[in-house]
Length: 593
Ligand code: F6R
Image (cartoon, rainbow, N blue to C red):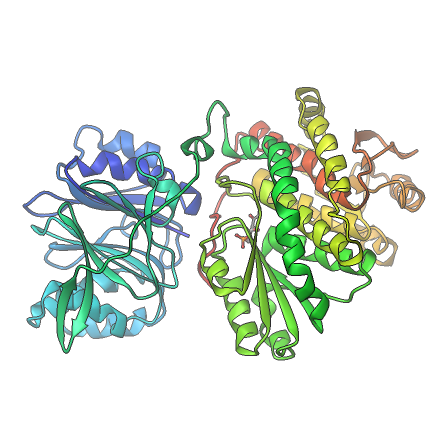
């Protein structure tokens, strides 16, 4: 939710910041802006729309200067317009800030600051930060001291970059929102995420909660309080070197990140088969000991939780519960030291899931994270981490991280009942996946997509683990292709939802050999009421109008079945001239409540 990126060094800041912001657009793309410091007054530029559009707009008048901060926004407070785009500036224009997070006491601060004569020019919660800094400086505090005072004044979450006219430096801090610093020989790149600066430097400093630093070409200094004075100290963290290859965050020859990530799944599954069994084996005793097993996650990750719940019952004969993380509050009260909470999160930053974990920890529960970002907030909060082996996922819609979550859950389920490493079904899935991502299979799926282009809603049905696929496929069709798509439980239709079927309604069925007959009966009931039948399984149903062949891969079948649906969502978005990487109103990392 919102990406922030800054640059301080010896090179012109604006083009570097724009490049860095472009690699953060998955965090939000409503509007963007930057502020550059060049010894004189700050130059601030903003626009509604994408960074590409912004780059063209300011090409001729790109502000000069070697220090600057930038922002790409996902609106939380105030509508999408230029006024609400960041950076926000103080009344005298000498201080600019960018912010990611939510300031919970912004309304009260705004009233107080307005009473003291500050003029607000946006509807955002973030703008209070610029005025708070200005007010403190007006009261005679140093800028460093004013910056440290933000910790006392602000409630909520924040990652903040601040720049002051004439200073040649950037002050940075974070609490509850991600912020890392890329480190070059005489330059720094504070940003929301590593991909932002990865093509320039692999050296990174991770900021702890409430840490404050001043960044200048001459070096990085820690800001701390000494009594009521702000002092600068040299004890700064040593940069780590990240091992991500820069091409893992570029589109390469692909038109979109989404299709690149869909097609990468054969490789990610192979990597996972090589690396995950060992990690999973270490976790298994924890699962065996736990009295209660609980999965939590949001969106696609929640669908993976449902698969985990199904799998533990079907394969390991263990009871577990799966919860949407934003709904966890009351369930958390039932947990204790014998409970084990398994949090699923691609980004590792989803606020709802973080909150759920905090509640679980307050009750003394043990915690495990399945996440794609091993140094994320969720990874740092949990007792154990199982990585997803997926590499960066930059399209807003989750694809390869979902199948990796399912694969790890399949390994967990198997490891509970057998001493074998459980990779056989995953190899089966890998082979099926290879075929389903072939050019011929994609062409077939694209052609089927044309059948779904009309105004009618699309229904997706399945039972058990195939219902999980129906839920996930419906979410992909909704968010990526803007389709009215609804998952209906295959066994529940005759109890009510059959009433929605009319002449021509497309109904997509997911099944395997085991529930072939039951699915055939359900599909023929729909067909008799006029539905057009699409089938996704090992062989067509008698009533299939269109079929996608997906071989049975045992417990790993849902990993395979979802692939044509990811491709379908992608192809439909393209047919409808939508950007599959950037669905309307969404952002990838949901760090707000
Ligand atoms: C859908 C999607 C979202 C995320 C959800 C949780 O394609 O990507 O529904 O799954 O926002 O995100 P993570 O997994 O990062 O916690």
